[in-house]
Length: 398
Image (cartoon, rainbow, N blue to C red; front, side):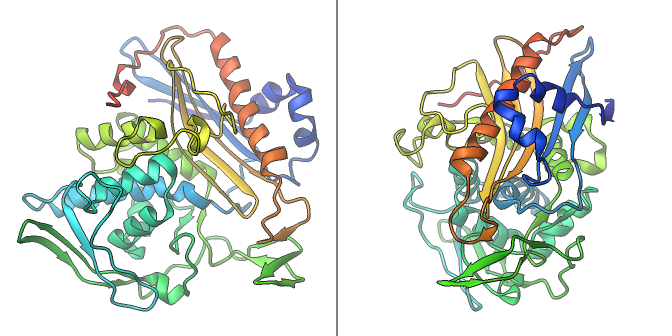
């Protein structure tokens, strides 16, 4: 496996071919805090992937709020943890109960979206990947514990990451460092009990200070000073794509970077990373509310049409506080196209955070759609010595 990172202006060149779509962003990339990492994949005679990356404004020190993109590493680490517990009868489908043992915690005994009405790690991962369910992520966070979540990534060499909190519920740092007790059981038999965990010494963010905007809303009040993000989740673009690559091409990354997953874990992740909400029976998602583009920002933005059957996107998106991110492996089985693309944009014209006024519709979604399509068009015409065999990414969605 060869990995080259080139700073050649490939990303800008591709964008400059479409001035009507990208002129504004090409002129003011600092304002939009744009970061793009585009990785070409070339196969050798034996179908082994070789990677060449092109970066635009990649900077691990330029903060972006990662929002839901943190859910993919949590899903992979949760599967890894189950494998490492190595308990007979305990797997991702095992029924579990979650207790509440500390301020801010909530208990779980049932899950009405599951076929058997019972919660499991598999079902939480499914919901995280299909529609980016926040509660499902919080349960994976609690299963792993804050310390294991971070150390699990750091040990793999992913340094520029610090995951410190649950999503969409506002708890204190102390409450976020305490994670719930879990019980896994089969019938009347308890297979594994995990006590409440506490990360007594959370590592500070690798970034010293992170202040954004010129003001923020606190309840109904406007606080006229930048918002402090230093206690919030942090992950770099390179780490996001590195994690994605470790999951999709484990054989092509250094052994240290691989997750301890079984072949069926990889198949499970590939299935739900690329499945469309309408293809799921449990949970059932109505197409009107959850169109194909619901968690596929690159190439499809806010399109209401169905994504063509020859294209599959293995990805994880995020959007919050004016940031939009997509971390994707895009495949066209018919035309033998494959590439990795990770992109961040910040759309907050009034520079006020938490006011619910962000230019997602006007700037964010069009940028993601157009960037994905522009790179895809470029890839369609790119000459390759050996066409890829993509069979391993063909999944049965039934």
